[in-house]
Length: 538
Picture 1: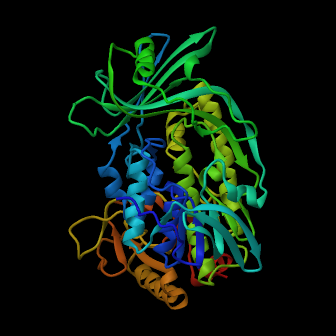
Picture 2 (picture 1 turned 30 degrees about the horizontal axis):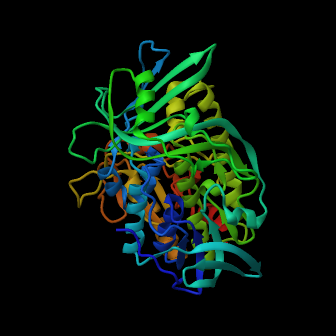
Picture 3 (picture 1 turned 120 degrees about the vertical axis):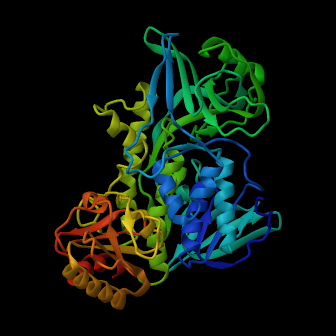
């Protein structure tokens, strides 16, 4: 059930005001609330939009949802994305399987955006949060340590004072305009139409279908069908279909506005969809049960800066691009995950003064790469410019994002890999490394090759607990089969940890709250970890 419309903002002051209750804003809200930060979320929509807009959920996002405790709800509401079948000019099919290494715990899924928002909304509500809907953000002023935002709802105008403001308010972001960040880029000349329909063809389940017609090498007719979980008893597969707009639905972009997103012109009817299927579908098929449809445009733009003072941008407010590879929503969710733990430390007074600056430093290059890659893929196909298909798929899955130039990473700042087969004597069920990361703070993974190493690393873990309390959780992981594996000691039963996290016999890794490796040392010590964390915790 969606949050009720509330014409009045429930608080006149808060730690963080989030504008926008889409997947990005709600991810940020949940991540902050689970860290004890007071949050107000406002959205001008009176209820969740019933559109299957952003539907692809990447393996990396599912890892984030796992850490947040909502991955089961997401998987239950989804269908597994197994690959894509491409047809060009009526020729034989070319199949791309979305195969990932076994060490990656999740595969990509397809799920309507309204389901993603529902799951996040329910998680936010369970933590005590509430979305204030039907209230529009109109502007802000920043003074010293306070941001004062003006809002307008059915009951009139109001203000909210917050320590920080985050704009998750989309491509036409008023927050972005408020900080004066240029939104540089361009628009694609093509206009598209979307539809959520069922079709009675026999294409393999879980595979997207892309069919194109070219004239002189230029695509002039297009059908892209992405599978959705079925929700009726018809037995027919359900797809979110995108196509080029026919002349009778074409509209001109609005002067001076960013041409991106759903248009307010005439909505496509079922016969418009059927006409494209008749031309391009790989087999004779009939569309039915259309739930919604719309016309939309695509731009590619990147905010020049993601933050200014106490104001931040995330998601489409910071970057927009073609939907190729389902990068948009997932990149925004990663923005929110990167920002949340840093804001939480700042609110708690535990952050180094420069910590919040690393949000732009880390995420802006990611946004720049995603915009460039999706534009390239939209024109030449997924994987364009990649010589290695596996690398291309890992990149599309957002598993290769790293922060090698970050001032708070000692090393490449890569995603913390998973590893299976960890054993504790109290449990008959093996653990994964990512199970140990399922909490909102830093994690120290301390390796011990033998029993003496376990003793030394236990002492190091005790030192970290004394110095940092709940802000650092430490585990000792050993390859010595004879060591008692209880408490914080875990055995590397399958040898996967040692392979994924190579180090010396008493090495260690510090994993950031967003699941990236902040530090690695072949011979770890309390002084080394303290020096690393001093740039984060001050």
